[in-house]
Length: 251
Image (cartoon, rainbow, N blue to C red):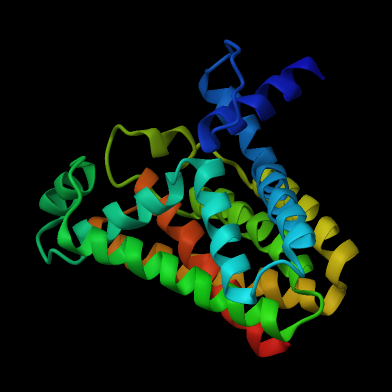
């Protein structure tokens, strides 16, 4: 049990800004086991966003609430996934060869396409969340669930994807995650989602996330021959947008 708690805390250290000031085991197996907790990290983020929605429900407009919720996630994660999305756009839209694309993605400087990606990310989040909040009495439930499914998709992409480079933070999970961790993550995520939304909506949202992840993996393979840590972050953002669109359609 102690080992599993340590692995969960390890994932929180990596993916969030929660101040866990504790030295934890960091072997390959620790990161593999930590991937079981992707949906739990998503649940933590979703709960914080749900609480914000609850207390701001009558205090601000739908779009102001959406902006606050979007900023809360970025603060909680340190913009970790948004940074991956920006780096991916910088590299992929430079229209260079594989080695050059990966080099651009590793560059700490923000390029034109990365800047556009960050602006588009925030605009999409605020507009889509604002529409969901404005049109649904149960919007906060979707806001609770979407981060869970999006983080679960990271484990799925880590399993189906191949590393595009020999070294990198993403390789802590890419091809390290096994089908066991994917199944555990999906089962945990689906049980939580089913308890909140019901079976039909749960299936629709998880199938959407799986299809988007598979398509993104194919696209990454065509561009750089595989995926990187930035790809994992980008997939989180893209799946989030797709889920918001599907939720809005279902409402």
